[in-house]
Amino acid sequence: MPYINVRITDESVTTEQKKAIVKGCTQLMVDVLNKNPATTFVVIDEISTDNWGVGGEIVTEIRRQKEGEDS
Image: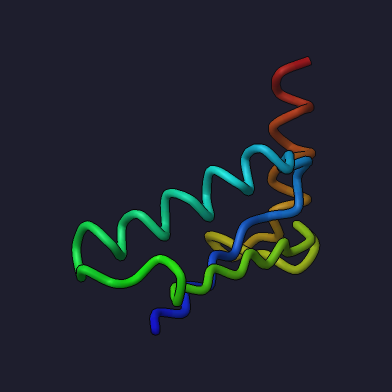
């Protein structure tokens, strides 16, 4: 019984995109490990960019800096 936890930043991910993630993760378990899709669980956690860091910086700040550069 696979349990897959996908964590993404909370940046307007649509329901259709989430459906595609769930379907794709489930199919990967079927294809690679021959798991039953009926017992494959996929959970998507959406994390605020204020609570996500990379390279020593908060993602919210990285996005703001990038927006300033693009203007």
